[in-house]
Length: 266
Image (cartoon, rainbow, N blue to C red; front, side, top):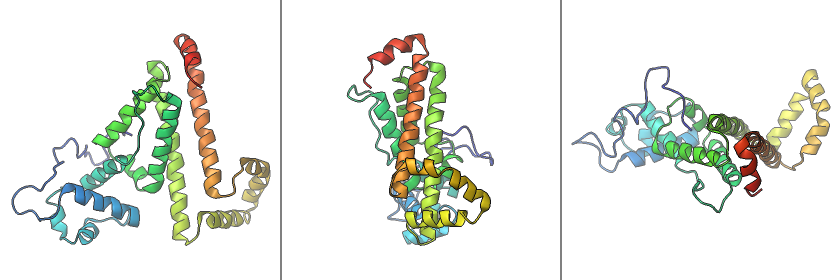
């Protein structure tokens, strides 16, 4: 999903500065390397070590080349991170908004689930998505499909961006927190369920937190789910359904939408 503007350094985007190239700058570049291989290795390292530990030197070691060899293909670390970010978006399995076989609601849910999965699989995506313009080909493909799916809902033009924000800012926050929780559990050497039990036990030692947990016992029981993953999936599904229902309600509020929404499959 596209960000609003350049970062604080004044840098715009690797996609705007003529820096994207498949091969090196010219004669003398290292053999066996290309931009795709470097980007793939970057994604792999970011998944393994995280954003804070990533460095061009560590990448060079992974590729078994010198650090200067990498700079034949990218000018800066930020350029490489932006390429990796767009490569991650390329892993999404997105619906075809032009097909008549799927309702916009199902397509919107599919995109939301895919985006959530991306943020969980690649926790480094969420901070980078808020850093760069996100105008690489894969990010733009996602934005285009999201706009087309939302337009199929029948919302008036002035409500399209608000609906997109409601759904995908929710998914961004949900997936980011979920990814962080999974990472913390892994760092502690625990399963998600064990870490959740440990966190709840620790929280009850605080009188204020224990009071809130006590007040919400009924809600937590009604939530259902035998595992953290099941509880989280139920929350995500219900919240997404609320947002879809909100879009439907706003469509009904428009004169044109009242008739169109009744004709669409539920």
